[in-house]
Length: 433
Image: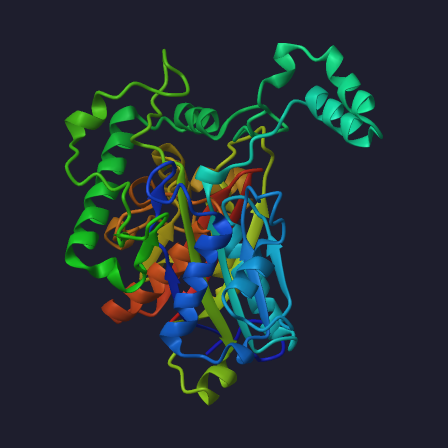
């Protein structure tokens, strides 16, 4: 069996859990990313009954960090009872941040620097920092430097009402000024993705996620999370899933980003979400010495980037051929595919690109496409459109879900792929044996 890396070390994903993914501004509105990550990591440690002293490193991904806890991983580590001597650091690769944490963990293990690493991601979009305007911040700074009351008050004499307007972080590309939704609209137009196809894709996501929830399939990966402030309520399922929707209901929603000619709606886009995922990775030999049966192993991965002026969210179509090639596999070998659904237009664009000879030749410089995805093996329990998308945590969910499902089905190879802001892409091949 092929091993990842050059030193022969095989990286095992031993176990993983996640909180429910909860629509921002609802049940988790009083929980920070730090607290969500702590909850997930405590449960992870308790479930596998590992001595925290065995952990060598902690790595977490996040996209919009809190100024009060810029090194999120360190705060999660300390809060989860991991020894203070264990180093921890935070990474950010937009929507692939948890994937970055996982592959960083793999590289740490392959290099011999660690045998046991906790990796994951956390995001609270309910707790998004809101900034003051630059002008008002300058007044505050000048006031802070004042040595007496008059000097502290004087900077505010030039204050205007407009200076008090909040500077809310925009989910847009700094290089192009386009939001994610506007980029999805561009992809829908250029790739001829119809509104009907997008709504049908979103409907599929909701129906599959709803069935998986009702059947208890996702129960293993979702931890019960107590809701502050009185902790009398428990969240134990993803609350963005709309099991009662219909194609007809979806078709009535108005476009959000291009109200006149657009096709991207709130329903065929992933919602703003709060949540966390936490996984534990080990060197294969270490896992066996501790008596664990891993969920699976990392076989290969790849990161790619393209111009943000092009089709921003096409990263999966660029990264997947490289990851498959590094794994020594083709798409035909893959038993399950988990693709992040930022938007139906984005997912459908990438699915079509996988099978397009023109795309392969013109964009990838390859003679043949990687092939057509079997939709019976694609996001079999729904995706981010239904389940939700806490930016920093989604990559962990994809990894946990696919490994659990490979085990249930007796499959061996899984493909995880993610698009990310900045026109980045990620793909990872996992295997069970």
